[in-house]
Image 1 (cartoon, rainbow, N blue to C red):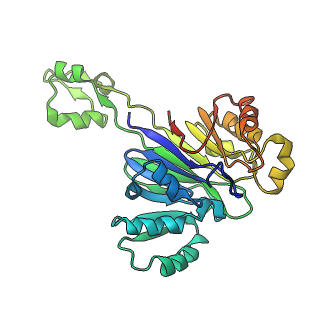
Image 2: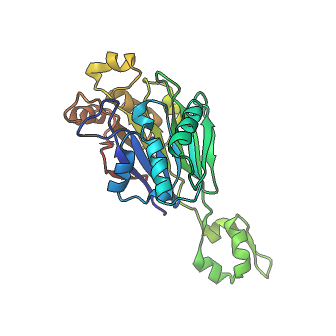
Image 3: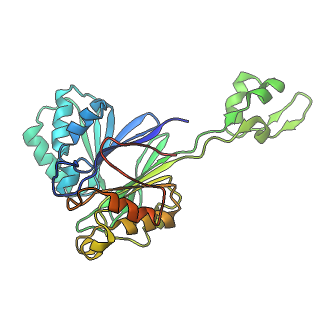
Amino acid sequence: MQPFKIRILGCGSALPTLKHFASSQIIEVRDKTFMVDCGEGTQIQVRRARIHFNKILAIFITHLHGDHCFGLIGLISTLGMLGRTAPLHIYAPKELGPILKLQMDFFCNGLEYEVTFHEVDTSVTGIVYEDKSVIVKSIPLNHRIACCGYMFCEKPTLPHIRRDMIDFYRIPECYRNNIKNGADWITPEGEVIPNNRLTEPAAAPRSYAYCSDTKYLPELYKLVYGVNLLYHEATYCSENENRASLYYHSTAKQAATVALNAKAKSLLLGHFSARYDNENAILNEARNIFPNTYLANEMSVFDVE
């Protein structure tokens, strides 16, 4: 099974601290590297995590609050200085388009690679990116401005050939792709060998959902149901639930409730308020509801399983 990894670059919230960087993560799936959110200081974290800058294929921005996008123009500029030639794709709410153009015209004039902006409708669930092995879907969220999360999904792979059965029935090499695609085998004597005797099922496709800044959405679990790994913001503990609601954020208890209802396998928490010296209270509150919960601290790496 190919690696499917989440690398945490930043897990803080709007107010800068000496402990946390602003929101950003790297998603590595099917030999591709994506970034989701790009807060201030992200490129420093990319260096620290020893990630090759030019491997980043696309950047997904959830919304236009500074702790999620202030690092974008700096990263674009750095990629130019590093000699990037491959296109860079930016997926974000439509409001970023004219802002990004203005910044690039001023700071990044003469780039030797193309930056392509893709407008994302944050009000609906839809496919925003697709290739032969990965789909990325938008997840509508409820924040003070247009905002969406993203769900990264592997596409199903073909079943595995059973070598022992292929050899036993002396099936020619030229026919094996047909079998991987579901065909039966008919022996020279006319016996039909069903496909399920010739193959083994491939591993189930995995998924990762990134739900950034949002007010608690009781129905959100339906959009991420069955996800392997869920990231959900947990800016506050329940003692500050009223504050969370006022500023359109969530508590650890609310994040854990979404994970529980979604039947997620694991939960990551992030976007921690600067008021907490450590996040143990946040973690413990979530684990009381959903035990398989972890803090998305900087430089942590999580496998999607």
